Length: 243
Image (cartoon, rainbow, N blue to C red; front, top):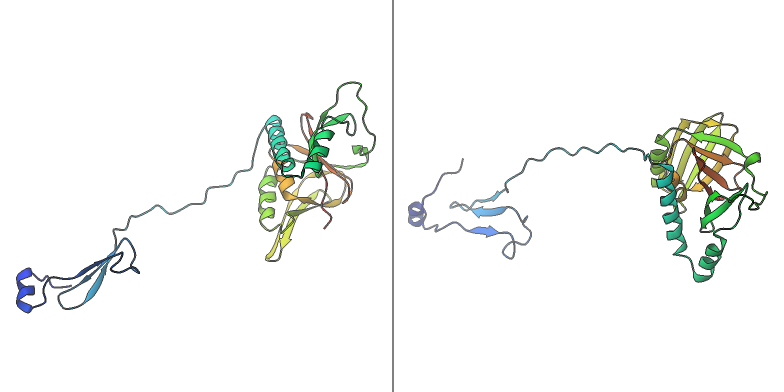
């Protein structure tokens, strides 16, 4: 323990008053909240600042998104419109012109950015293109809400093109991604009528996740993937990546 030195003892010993350095110009490398003191015997001690005890940080539990089909629809519209706004003038005009055009099986295009499209049921009597019918597609239903968090985790390792691989075999869906630093892989059970393997842009897949159960149709790795909510009020069509 340091001896308490009174002013009279300092003056008698010729040491004078102690020198105190404060953070700033006098001692720029000092922590801003503490200070140094030179004792009468020449010893320099550092006075730590008052330490506030903080509660240990606890990572909040991540929860999957659960929303109505209508709310997901509005988010998809905004997300696609945002993509369109980044296109050049010519491509933007082409996308705008496709709005309202007929699509497969009595559906029409609400909005598209050329890589994905949002569809709504067509009016009675409106023609529809037979090409792209979902009758020759494999059908799958995702009921596990954890799929949303799985895709978000996969996006962390998805690399330059945000490629998220989806592979279904015997009712087991494998979700994977990789970049130069490593890879990600998780599996879950789903209801599916066939086996398939596709790669999607994860930033296009994530916005549609939130309504459960979510139906999807997959033909092959080169054909559009179709997502649909349980109430069939809209369809979300995404072109796969060729990786």
